[in-house]
Length: 195
Image (cartoon, rainbow, N blue to C red; front, side, top):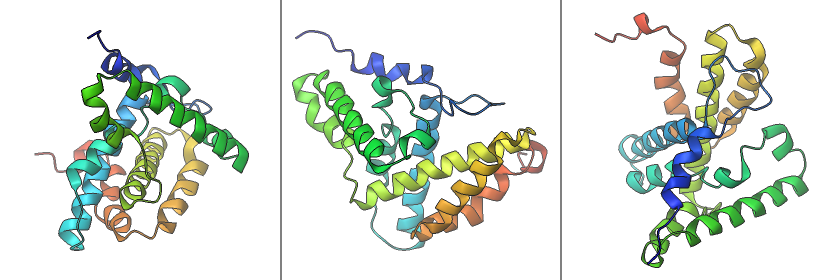
């Protein structure tokens, strides 16, 4: 068996910058973002299961969220205004993302491909996908709050737009997270009761 480049490429997510069109006070890369999305998705899943009494495989959810942007190793992070400019661009970009995922999966040894295909391939109609999408937006919203706290007004409009998207999600887990956890992101460290 020959060696595989899969994990070496996954580790390169840290070199792919996000928010390319925006002036960032706090640069963010895809690896950092993916970690935060996984943390938030896990939280949304726990909220679904433990607060709202709905079944949720929180481990599978967090794992899928961790890899949700793996295709960007090949595609880069296409800025939102371009990605969603019109349906044709969105559709074409999704096709490119799917090709990138197939390329990543093909890099794995045969005996591992099934497990990673389940993680890397998104079923856009699934409840898991909806929670990951919400976690992705929540991560972006938190990024906007953090930029705003540094005095960077570049993210003010994005913050308002993303909050409107989050408020439109028909997911009580999202509103629970906003109500219970977002206010702390707006406070400085000495107000977080760290000791």
